[in-house]
Length: 157
Length: 157
DNA sequence: TATTGTTATACTCTATAACTATA
DNA sequence: TATAGTTATAGAGTATAACAATA
Image (tube, rainbow over all chains, first blue to last red):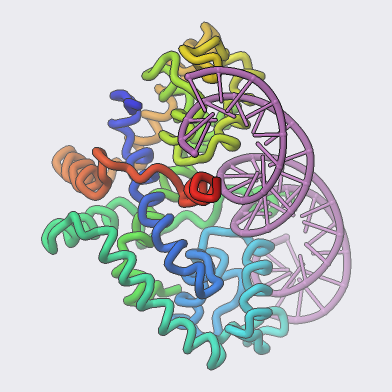
């Protein structure tokens, strides 16, 4: 099955294929831990930003408040994180709890194994170059808030 | 919100972020045409491989027969493609029909515009390098059939 | 007014499992 | 036995739209 010139030239398509390739593998690696890639990312973000709120977590994951809520509920039910009162009376503060900290350590190992195995076709210099190019591609400084729609919510108010 | 060293080092995570960035934009660009990125990809693959079957299309898209079926149904209902008898009595042969051909031409323009705009932070040399690295990352020769599970189906039989 | 969390609901995408008909 | 298509069903993930409490 040929891709054809149009697809071959599209960076977005090539990124999708590459991402899918790695994600399938890491998802399989995480399944025994009961986590999806997104849930693992959430755990790592909470560990790195202890006390963060749900909306902020959602922004980092590029999902809206409602989706972030669902994700947080699951991680709480799994006994991996907890909600504590935040600095506002509005906001929660999210923290890993011991079981979550322990799981994260396991999970990081599995994920790193998968990641290095799946990128083994590239040597060190190539890997560095790829990371650099991806970083340059994305506005690490100004990631656009969300998938469009909380804007509607905001502007309709 | 900091990513933290673990996420920063994971190629899979960086690919996901980059992919998401471009996909959000191309999705918005395609919405007026009533197509999602995956549906556009399917159209381009059918155009490039006229007469292909549904299962083959699914493999190229990394989805199983059932999901491919659903996708094909939608494209048929939209009046963009048609099923004709294939070389077996089992297989269908998929073809674009005029409305689909016309739409593809429009769509390719929109998608290219989005793609070049979203990759504008990279110069020509960097873009080429990125394409090369992504190609090297993925086994263009031996893409593993599927997301794991038709194997179970096969081995259970 | 804007923001945080929350809830209920719905939609999209994809998978699983079973069945039919070919090969 | 293996493959192509089909169907019904279920699950994950995410969005929208509303509301309450707080800022």
